[in-house]
Length: 304
Image 1 (cartoon, rainbow, N blue to C red):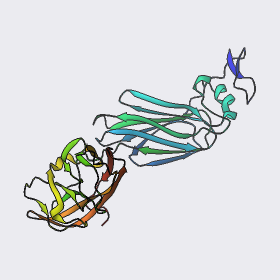
Image 2: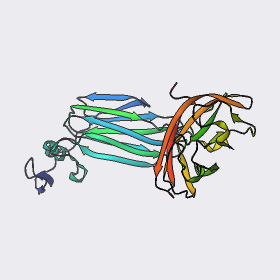
Image 3: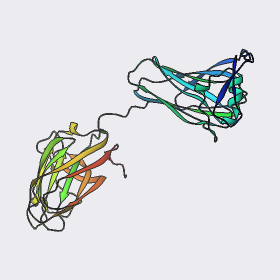
């Protein structure tokens, strides 16, 4: 008995009394791959088995694939886990796959080629350091491109800037009072912001362990004497996305609008000056509102 497709474009199959065609012995090729490699194959048949060598970083293993019409099956195996595409490509070749002994349930072709996409498996531990990618087809293939993408673990700690301190500076330049706020960085309290006067008041929040650190020269309009200063633990900062919250502490009934400058100041003893720009944030909303803002911190002076 064998399985035959009713016709080339039909999704249905029938059982035939004809004896199935025995599968030929197909060649197997073993290959190596490294992170970032791209492998392009033309005109192969059988199996290609790639051993991908990775680092100890954790994250996702991603195999990108693209190609022509003739179906292939791509599998990614790591540490006992397995994902597979099934046979992807153009459905006009389904009958040839079935004649070659492929189970119809393993065929994921379409009226336009499905031979494009990606496979992903998580790598949550340092070891093992290898993954296996298997490409197979009983048909002489046309083109296939594979991209081998390894996990890349971003640093968890903020950039190290030995001669600088990060500062959040809020200056009420328009001299119109806003609400008062408790300021939180990544859910850690770093100080109180009092904007209750119709004046150029504000706050300076310094990432430092030096209790005497002060900004002596900045790039904001408010007089230093009207800027409250707070110091916080630099370990509250993280690499990448940081969350800055302004949690409303007092409604002053005049709506809210302002900017927050994020700067890295040059340190000379306890004196901070000559800031470089890390970013600028804006808050705006009605009286009584709280604000959640975010910024990226991946370099000491990213705009320099």
